[in-house]
Length: 315
Image (cartoon, rainbow, N blue to C red; front, side, top):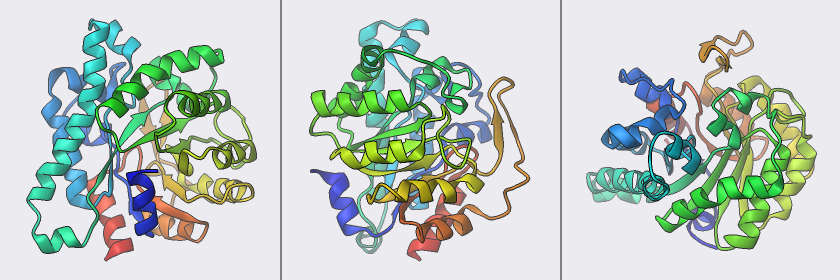
């Protein structure tokens, strides 16, 4: 295997990054369109690189590309040719690579010795992200195995071709889609390393109702999935979800939850979660006891949250 396995072998704790769209919003950029933050790949790619750099500075060991919402069909609908759309997917990797290089060269030799050189994870979001209708939170869509493969293939190919160190198969709300992606990797991209991260609305199943144990078995059986867990999920659900995963899977776990607010996909607005009392770091310390080794944040988390994780786990 490659760089991701090496990182897992050498680092007991790995710090992921946080939200991209949230940070763009905080800087005054509108991410409410169908392409979300991927819109700025077309218009102002430098601001995406700037956000990546802020996460590298905060202590992230893995930087996730801005391709979550990006797909060939979405870019074609935005007026691009298929060739330009493919190049733009590759550009998401180049922006992350440049951000890492920029920050790394500014570190002293002493600082460089204290952390691993960050990796680039090519973000593979679900079909739901292309629909942009909040269905990440329901998983309520059905495609055939071939349709899932056809949707995901060109993006995965572009991300790997551009030099992604691993794939972040993330925010997956649908069990059939997860299985289709893993079979696609096994048959067409057998050298790729990946982590697999689900989104859930309950304590024992992901968004579409697929049971955690079934998904844990899926992850356990794939030699390409080196870590598995949950993102874009309310923090109070994560401990029981990890319990279910731990019944059937002994791979490293990962968590990068939302800040604790809940999202309304219809109104595209966020609301406080009354059950959320602990900080991201406090929660992450608890989840560490359940086998979590990769920690980050999803929606509504920012570089300062990641800096707290890095400081809290690595000093």
